Length: 385
Ligand code: UDP
Image (tube, rainbow, N blue to C red; front, side, top):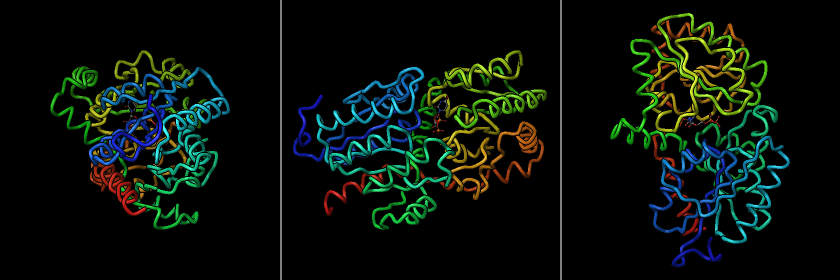
């Protein structure tokens, strides 16, 4: 715990906060870049909205949080979690008294941490700003989390030009918006370098590659709230259909949530060519995407990562706040109808030119330099702001 006040040796103190695995993946490059800039006293505060999944990323990046609010509880309501983040993160701000806070994306941590800053007039920089679906219930509650954060922030790090123009359309001042690329590509490059230097860092996928040698691999993730119930049942049915082919294997890391794990285990156990596995550490996950031929997902971050590895992404959602991948041809929205998912995957497996068109498309999410740009912008703000 800090004594409060200005950071070490008179450096500006920056608190970087996050609570979930995807946020941690996208923020560790920012912490690295801010530290490398040498001008800041950087403190990491985690809310631990996810626990084990977050810890595995903290370990990968060797990040030791200054404060760990440890707010995860089973089955807590959004109200209860939001309230606890607001009060506990507010207390952390009172103890640390940062000059600026950086938040990420669209979780309850993002919104409530921003509000706690606002109540203390501490400026907020929003990393991955400007993603919009246009529907406050899809994704829910993320669309409102990010809009509220956008109202509070004075620096908006938009990953793409599309995100920047969404912010301008909401009357955010043009000079507060910076197009940086997405920091997930920085994280991906870091992960690839680590695995290349030491392949034993991705042990689960090494074992599965041996087990499924000679088969084409479909990597699957599905966890979104909107897909609980009917959507998950349809996704399971599509995977059953695909698993009838003996030239493919399916690898599916399951979230601990029973709305996902329970349904999938029941529907998909007993197929030799389907591996239902525990959530993977990030390095193993990147190795899985690299080893796969197609990625089937309802995740946000994976839509951004897979194209950098040249893997077509079929997005099992009706809308996406990441239209750039669809426009560039790296991703296709296939919804959650079992027949459509199976047909679209089959088309990619059997039609080589359709496959190449998607796998060779340009990745619109950046070149791995986003975190460095963010650190430069924060430094400029300090010098001239
Ligand atoms: N991921 C991981 N292990 C897994 C599944 C996903 O490390 O078993 C990573 C993935 O590479 C991506 C992030 O977690 O960077 C995506 O998280 P998730 O799909 O949970 O959330 P979303 O992006 O939809 O918010």
